[in-house]
Image (cartoon, rainbow over the protein chains, first blue to last red):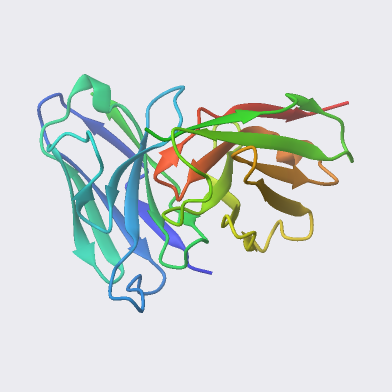
Length: 113
Length: 114
């Protein structure tokens, strides 16, 4: 099974400043169809998870452009260009290259300093 | 706009079977664009994929739960369902249904307790 490892697990940030979360998979997430099914989810307190980014760098409908994803193979990054109060929550990377199987990272808690 | 809503008992006794239903609205569960899945989150912990199903009925389960899980689909009702047998306290969690991990339901809390 693919293991997803996120760092850091906690990220205190200052409002208006950038934040970055890393995610590493235990094996390449490149699918035989050439796509890499690495997604990022946001879970605000008391809310269900919400898809932010799919296939490494594609923003889902309605996601602000301050969120961006990058990476390839086994190493991926989510960046928030300027953290806003509504960005507080837990962020998960997940792989669906073995779809419909899915595997999630442990989650990274983003909080305001 | 596709929406999903979980329903089912909030309390299940140990050793019994947990049964939940996810109702899909705003689109057809027979759409080939999606597979339909269940994910759970124990209190204060992370997300765990339980299993997924295509509208054709093909199912895929997390190997750690496979012996206890059954997911089924009812295209006539635009619903899919989860059954988890022989539950214990460790199965206490918020259970989410999702469309291909893209669109999620609000979740339903299930507590296993006598």
